[in-house]
Length: 325
Ligand code: BDP
Image (cartoon, rainbow, N blue to C red; front, side, top):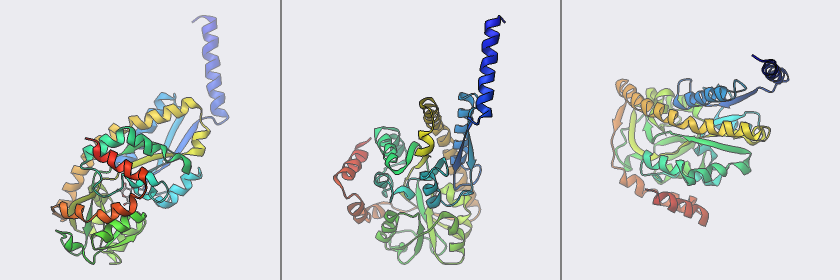
């Protein structure tokens, strides 16, 4: 090695050492309500590995899974104020805060998971990500959450009529309360972590979620009738606090954005496998899976669309989503 080169190498080592010494290593704390091993948790960990590699060990992510940092409504607030750097949440709990998120949270807005992926991967998805910024958050990427269906502890619901009088927990969004009411049932908004004991003690009859959540939350143990009405295909979103973001260099922002995008394909692969596995597990454990005709459920949603798609901008967004092939 020639002398100049040696000098260059040792200077570089020195600079990176001193950067570490004065605390320029960036550790992003990220929240998730799901347990370790769940596809969203694993995807953010994977994103952290990509970042470590691409930043030569300078940027990392610590994932706090299993709601260690709190229930989603609270962690969203904490992320807005920069107490938590990153958060992986369903779009649903953002509905009251970011109006644009109501559209992909509408029942039956997507014809299939494939349709959802095409829409959210395109410019409509980007527009909705950008809508987070005025609320103190930067939207980084979407993950899959499959389709959500109703489950309960009392009756095998096989039609809209069977929903009458049942009490279902929904995520904390007015839109989902009205969705359940439109089906003739009662809605109880409640944090995810309280649902198991609420069903067990009979405070509610059931809830609604995708198969991996139905299984990993152990709700299947207390609510064995799972009706495949697939009313919501609402994606998950990964956000970062705007205050954290604004403290990063443009290069680091780009590294983070790209690593988030690059974790999506990995999450989807894990998702597809988790969904198939969850169905097997709950079936084997005694859940009754009930196939239903979806059209009457779709037809009942008219009033929800009328009420929530209430501005020309949201109407246009709905029309554009429906037009995507
Ligand atoms: C799961 C979502 C999670 C929500 C949960 C819920 O991944 O973000 O908190 O549903 O129903 O599918 O609250």
